[in-house]
Length: 401
Image (tube, rainbow, N blue to C red; front, top):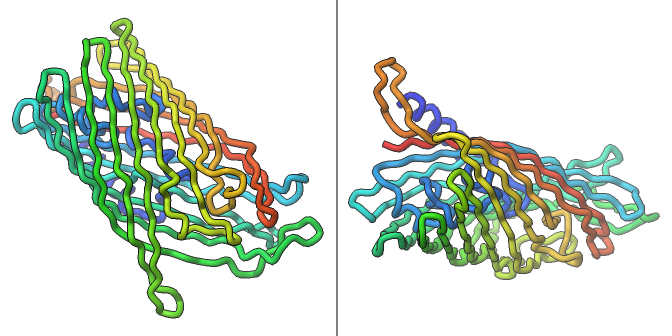
């Protein structure tokens, strides 16, 4: 219990430290260390408490009481340069993310789950050059959601789940006020705009998971779009309002076990980013107009022992912006994500030395590396070429009572 208390304390510190939260793209982060090691392909597996985040139907197959917490750390580097190889600008925000999920099965084939996580996050922090040039300041979108779900298994091997998200959102952006281009050099004023809005919203999620045969599972998840009415007060003490709509998402996956120690997972995820409200984030008159995306995620797991697993994954994330809409506020890029991980899932014995099992324990670690670019912007005042790389690592700890 002391271990559980320590893990929960660390996770709560992470969750309640908003200035440390942030990710480069809105939906890059995986809320589960186990899923992250598998490239994010977890829709058809969903076999621990973090099923709450990936496919709530998976909760129906979990017995007794379970808790799982995850912590992720990393840094994302993005660079922007003039096409002629001139001025180079850099953004390197750090991230420190966490979540927690709990599930309880009061009766057979019916499970309740609840958890706290960050479904959409983004941050860029452009550092001014030594000569005073800048292409922007700190841009941030942070969401925090409480999800509560119920899952049932009406037919043996087939489960369905539904959930409700209560979401809090903070949006801040600091676009540079460009004067123009002088002698092929970007020039901006001394001040950078500073805007911020806060709001709340509610969304719906549903999932299904079918264990066709022991070696084949298929799963699907639907996330309803999330409209958020945002408000703030400007320096003139005037009320400012905006609307932020986060996209609906559909994910489908398959899990295969061709031989006992080896499993393969594949997910396809569609996101309607064209529903994203563009009136909040602007840069040099360019609105943040996003397009729909598709992400392909794949993972493989090999179990060398009864309680241990080695994992690897790959994901291809499609950019949600085209050249005309790509600005320093949100220079989203196509990216390839590579991941590795290790897991333990087995008994946890008492430290008193009496050999008594006190709970089941799962422990997962992962590392992810992502690359993106080069990708150009077609805007004259913001004609830049972007590149990015990202290294992220983390761990997850779970208990079964």
